[in-house]
Image (spheres, rainbow over the protein chains, first blue to last red):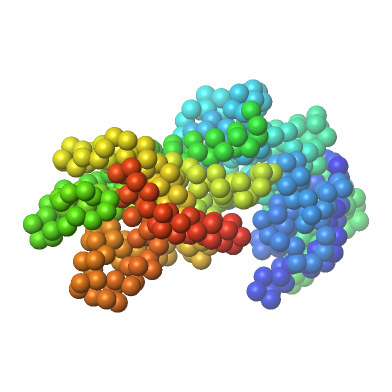
Length: 242
Length: 256
């Protein structure tokens, strides 16, 4: 169940945002790294159908995003950079609403979500309004929500930005555990280097271009860098700033 | 249960929950028409005489005359506020979640419109019950007869609101548009004065009111409340539902 991005170019008001992106995301925990404004969120919005492709092609296994959007949406779990929860509803109401948008009954949602919420230490907050939750808890709700319909693909756009260390650790460990047990294809976009492990497939985006891709440890060897941070700096910052 | 039914039910539940949780919206939805009925109508009661005209079979008090217009006003405000919630959802990001659904967007929009129509109906019923307390007597069967008219009007005005929401990028702009849409639609209609009275004072104003589709919502509801059908008004509103519904679904812009 791979995601294939072929020759994707995207411009916004004549300004190029993505240039000829080619990459394949295989099952596992794929990391998309890039500075602010690199085009990570734009790429994700193309993958989620929030923006329309201008050039190139995106396929999820055999499904073409321009032709079979609805079929893809049924298999796609997403956590957006900006929170998308309804603040006036409770955690449970938010989750059952999302489940219903995928045709799932409230009973089924509750059955599926109870163990996830327990793992994410949220079960006690099930009937609290989202407005009363802190940012870390809201993120956890969104992580739980994106799994309700048992997706094959997970796209997470800077899901841990702005969270404390404990929340970040809990979320990233939870996602990695899911990937290991369910063989999902995950795209994790971030600019936080400590979230990348050496065995992760790594994609580095800078100024709308995919400047490097491969296994993290292979890229470290290739560029003779000792850490992901050094590798990232060497590839994304102009020589004069190093 | 069918996936579509589950989805529709969830959208309806969400709209109802949000409505009752937003206390100021709930309160203003009831206080606004009551103020018009109790304060405005009482003041104009002696100034405005309403002669016998269909569907009324005898002279009526001005309070009784404006009740159908106020019902339509409730629907107008509620429909526009539903569109406002679409702008809010778009701005706050929750629209993205709607777009992640594998269920067709046209069905999701239709569900939203039905949910808004149900809320309009609920508010109209509460208002009519309260109107009874100030001696405006609507026959009980008028409540039943008016349900399709309220739904049809709510669909038309909801679809119109959706079209408007496509052109609005920020919540702040929506308030301005509401002033340019809601108030002209309401005042340039037969909601507050019969059209023959407007014709007496200004012919051009009369023609504007005649071409205002909201006038037909008001008249359709007015006749329905007394167990009658205004065929012309119903046909105009039905046409507006079809045209605006088609345009609203076709031009719906889920993104900012």
